[in-house]
Length: 152
Picture 1: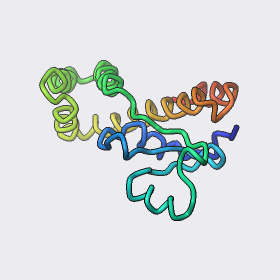
Picture 2 (picture 1 turned 90 degrees about the vertical axis):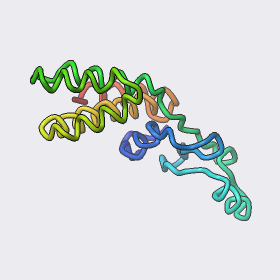
Picture 3 (picture 1 turned 30 degrees about the vertical axis):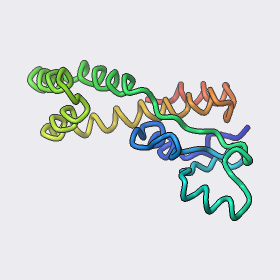
Picture 4 (picture 1 turned 135 degrees about the vertical axis):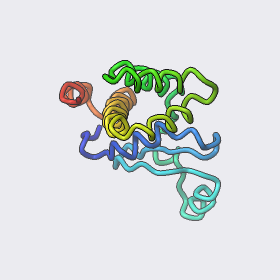
């Protein structure tokens, strides 16, 4: 088991949100080092010449979070928006087809809210990354709980 400091939480958060890859292309973490890497056919071909693969190294696949979690983040963020016009505009953006794209378009037109969104989003993803490490037994539950208690 490693310590939280051995992991790049930003890289892990990015991997947890990456919905643009197929089943044969994915991110994984090396439990011996905490390194997060991408696996693909090309990497597999190179790795075969070096004599290792993800499974041989005990790698743990990082599957992306479900999209409903991202949608829930947008809902939670919107509920905290103070300006009623902004809140209404953002609410309408996610009540449409392609809510993620429409939310992104709407939030970029509200500069004050955009900065708050990034702060909110980064904090939510940091919590998910810590929970993922804990759930995959890469860090101790005690260290995870301490880190989660100090997260915004």
